[in-house]
Image 1 (tube, rainbow, N blue to C red):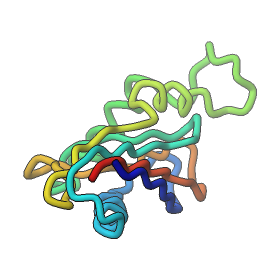
Image 2 (image 1 turned 60 degrees about the vertical axis):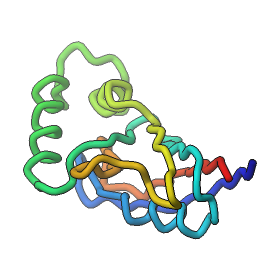
Image 3 (image 1 turned 135 degrees about the horizontal axis):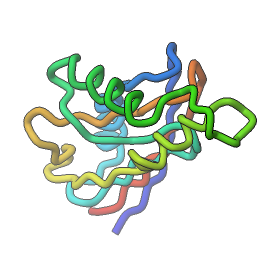
Length: 136
């Protein structure tokens, strides 16, 4: 069993943004030499997240961000965190900081319309994504 850890940077341009990182993740898996295994995509930031969703239609990320902004508004009178980014912390917790993807035939084992997204909720910022690849 091999174990490889890689990371790469992601730069957001907006406060709330979903960035398709599928190609960067795919490249890392291809370079790893692992043909069968498990990949963990991890975000070490408390105001960002990782999710898997449709990457064929750009309206899907827009709609997800819209729904999150309706569910957790940026300006809310009850927030106590003084940095002004309480909504970003809440959105990050709702989406989650990691996703697990199977590796089969040296490829990401994703559904036809699925992609991996880095979700920025407190941008613009430069962030890091950590990949842990395990397998044979």
